[in-house]
Amino acid sequence: MKLEDLPRFTVHEIHEADPEGNSLIIGHFADLRGVCGTHGYLYRAHGPSIMGDLEAIPTSIAEPVRFRTADAGYAPDLKAGAAYPWLDGSWKPYHLKMVLSPAARWQPRSFSATPVRFFLLDGVTGWQPMDATLPQGATDLGVRSGDWNHACCELCPEQLEAARSSEGYVDDDGRWICAHCFEKYAKRNDISFAIGNDG
Ligand SMILES: [Zn+2]
Image (cartoon, rainbow, N blue to C red):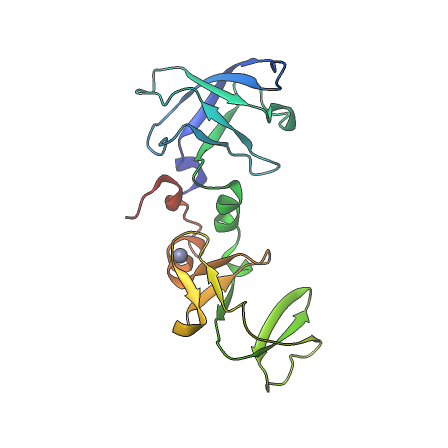
């Protein structure tokens, strides 16, 4: 599933911010699949997304939609006629961004319960078994053990734990996903998680 497959919100009218700084955007959805809650984002790939709340979830695509946001000022492109993918508020814009970015940004890693040596190579922090030779050009950051040995997958409830020697993937921003979510979503730039599609 691609960005274009998210429910598309087209802007009709913009009512300037009230004294609390909230603008009212009136528009419509082209598709209601994936419009599950009132809180969400008009997703912008370049720049901050527009976070806000629908006054009500429309029951048909013919129904005008009223969306309130305090973020209108961040988006110079927000004008009548503009259209944005709608992201349900149970996700964050960075979830889309990280899954849509090239799969090569993800590095496979496995968790280890034993102490490991951290190093810095080309601006990226890595780790390896304590007694292994450092990669060429790497800066030794020392041996650490203990509380870093688990992480949560960003996309599912999977816990990546040393105890189970889980395999996972970490991106340049230090975000973890499990091997399953890497195969299913990140590797294929598939964002179907965003509309709760487990298929
Ligand atoms: Zn996962």
